[in-house]
Image 1 (cartoon, rainbow, N blue to C red):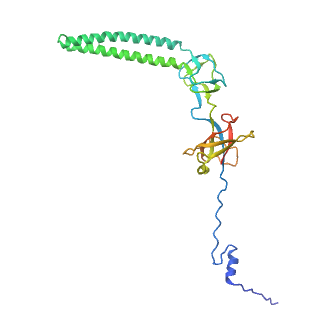
Image 2 (image 1 turned 90 degrees about the vertical axis):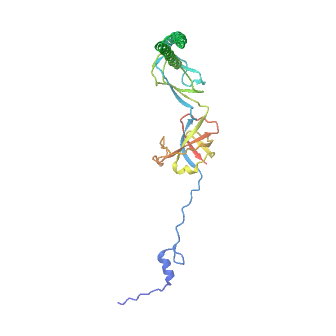
Image 3 (image 1 turned 135 degrees about the horizontal axis):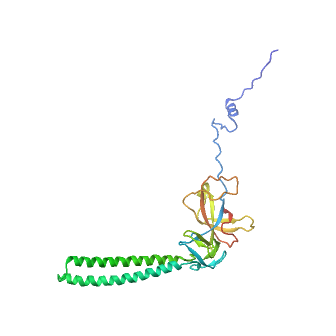
Length: 286
């Protein structure tokens, strides 16, 4: 049985448009792909921790060995700069310092004798009464006496420094966060004694992803929130570092990468807050 086929004629330009798709132009060119939409949000969200300003969080260690004989501060004690925190037994060091000071007095007496002898022999040498060898010996004895005085004085300075280091004072106004020693305990050089912090001035150190670095500028307003707190506090970007570093703590969001670099942005807190030193916070840089 013969089949008849019906062919529909269509203009060639229309056929081309049907083959190329709906995005073809009447002139035969395809439309360029639409550009990606720029991010409309001007906010940068990141995590951070409450920190002190530089020099506001210090761990005090002993520079000398000794037994603790005085320890009056406890954890949470408020201390002022220069206040005595701990005293070490310095009985032996003070005795050695007394011997060194006596040695200085003895050396100065010997120096005075050799100096007068040198002056007397120099006059005789000028009158050609004594020989050159005698003059040289007098000069040598005077110089040795000078060296002994200098050595004894240096010993006094060293021992006095050790005695001074047995009394340890606070380098700042702050609060004792931790106390690592007890009265009567022996300590060695380098042993930590206290951790002090100035809690009157705190700020936020926020880890901003390196991809958002160009969007953060000093003076930018910041909103600060903490888990478990309903209040939100105001802040401002205080310092933006010039270098990218690695993360110091893992983000709470499991969807965020941990191998990217971050900017450790410093944020000043403008409102009174109940935040604690080291507490994790969420920041939103406007």
